[in-house]
Each structure stands twice: as structure tokens, then as C-alpha cells.
Length: 185
Image (cartoon, rainbow, N blue to C red; front, top):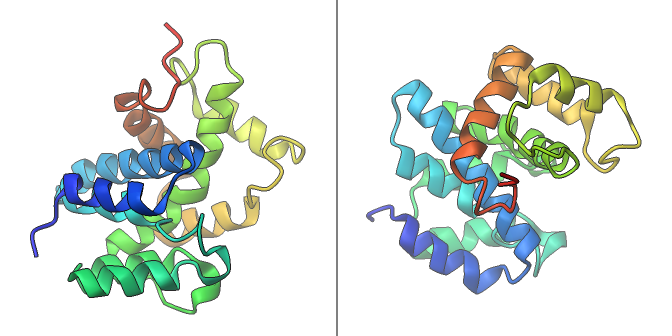
């Protein structure tokens, strides 16, 4: 099977009607692409993994990500993409063994958190620094549903420094800031 963002986008829009969840998927895709560039991996491939990671969340939250992976298997998506998507859900019991799987787990929650930080800043993502994100992470009332414990666990398992991780995610998000509604210039 040829991995294509165009085909993945059609699939995403078939399953995800919520603009908010679509934007989250675009943001995770952008973060995955930034890491693919960093590691010399295939950006399209890693991006598709990020784009489709929450494919079933809106319609079937109680069966997420199992139904998404079943659909991806039916469509012939590679096993490593399926495994990464399963692994991003801590309750799936699937170990995150590949670099792509560890990356997806590490970027998912933190990407959403950084986007939330950008929404409340007058300049959005522009000029955002790791220290301001870490300060917001300490504020338990801000984006309260985001698991700080999961972020810490994911960053540790990925083996990156938090500051560098935040910077790389911001770098990826800047590429799609307009698409995410974060271009405040």
C-alpha cells in the first residue's frame, strides 16, 4: 500500500466531523513530521500516523483506538502504523517499541497542550518558549484534562529533553499555524 496524506485526509474526514478534533489530528501530524525531519525518516509516513491516530475517537470513544486500527488493517495500512496508534493509548497494553510509536505517544498530549497555550497568547505560537509551556504545565487548572503524568512518562520513554521536545513541537506547529487558527499576525 502506498501511504498518502490525501487518502488519509479523506478517511479522517469520513470519520471525524468535529473541527476541533480534526485540528488536533493536524497538529499531531505536524509534530510527527517535525520529528521525521529531525530523525531523517519519511515525513509523509510519520505524518499519516499522526493524522489518523484519533480516527475513531469521536464516533467510538469507548473503543478507541481499537476500531481505528481494525479499519486501517482492512485498508492495508502497515502494521507499524497500526501498532503506533494502538500504543498511544496507555490502556491498550501495546508496547511502544518503534521510534515512530514512541514519538506518537510523546507528541500527542503535549501537542494538544501547546496548542492550548498558543490560543491564550496574543502572539499565538510566535515567540513561544519552553519555559512558558512548562510554567503552564505547573498550573493544574490550565487545560486540566491534559495528563501531566502521561506527558512526563512519554517524554522520558522517548528519551528527549523536555525543552528540546517542546521546541521541536512548536517548530512543527508553526508550519500549520494558519490551518490550526493560530496565525495571529
